[in-house]
Length: 361
Image (cartoon, rainbow, N blue to C red; front, side, top):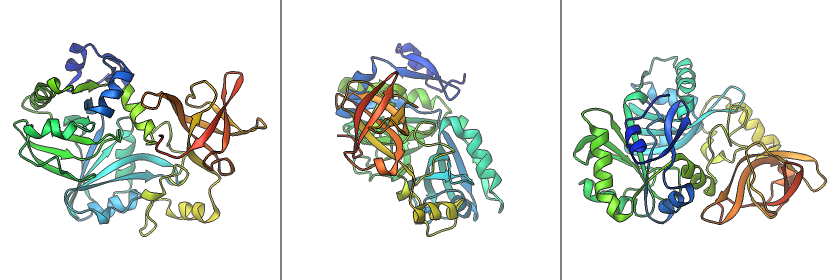
C-alpha cells in the first residue's frame, strides 16, 4: 500500500485505516455520523492526496482535452475549473474528472480518481496524436479538501488571498500557511462549501500546512474526516462515485450527466451519445428513499410491484443528516419518474422505496 504525506498524522490521531485505491487511507476517526455532522454544520479536513493530477501543456493541450472529455473546456478562462468525464469508445465512462485552466489555451491540470490514474493516463496518451506535453504529477502533489460552511472563514487568516469570496469552481494560486505556490480551489465533493488545496510535497510543506490548519481550526471545532463520511456526504447530494454509480458501462446521459455532455464539439463517442439522446434512454440513474425499513446496498436488485427486475442499486446508506435510508440506482425509464414506487431486494424480501428528486432532502 502507498502512503500519503499525511499517513503518520492519521495514525497518530487514531484513525481507522484501510486500503483504498492502493493507498493506506483513513476511513474514520471519531465515527462517520460525528464526522459527517462536523462537515455539514462546521468544517472538516479530508486527505485526498491519493487523487491523480496531470498537467497538459502546449498549443495542442486544449485540442486534446476537447477530444477526450465530454464538457466544453474551451469555455474555461484562467482560474476557472469544470467537472467533466472521459467517454470511452462505447459511450461508457473511463473516469469523471476536474479540468483546471491554469493558462488559457496553454496549461491545464486534470484531476482524476485515484483508482483510475494509470487507466486515465494511458487513455489520454493514446489520443495525444498531436504531441501535447503531458506530465503526471500525482505522486508529488498533496491535496487536502477543507469542507463545510465555516471552512473558508477558519482558513482565511492563513492567506492574504481573499478566499471568503472565491466563486464556486474558480481557483487562485499563492501563499498559504507560509507555503508558496498553493492552488486554492472552490471545489469539493460534499455540497457543504469550502475549498480544496493543492501543493507540492517538498520542504515539509505537508506538515506545515496540516499543522497550521489544525492550530487555527482545532479550537473552532475543525475535525479530520475520513473516507466514510466523504461517501455519505456526496451521496446526500446525489453526486456520482466512480466504480459505484458510473463506470465503463454507464453512459453520461444515463447517469444524469447530460449537463457535462456538450454536443457543440467533437469528442469520443459523440455519435453514440447523440443517438442515445435522439432514440431516448432505456435506463436512468435515480435517487430513492426507503419507505420500508432497511438499508439499500451496492448491486442489490431493484424490482417493480410485480416482482420484475427493473434495475440495480449503485449506492446506499443510512443518511446521517436526514435520518433515513437513501440510495441511488439505475432503473428502466418507465420507472424513473419522481414518486414512482420501486422495491429493493434485500435478502429474501422486497422492501418498498420511492424515487425522489436529487439532492436528497
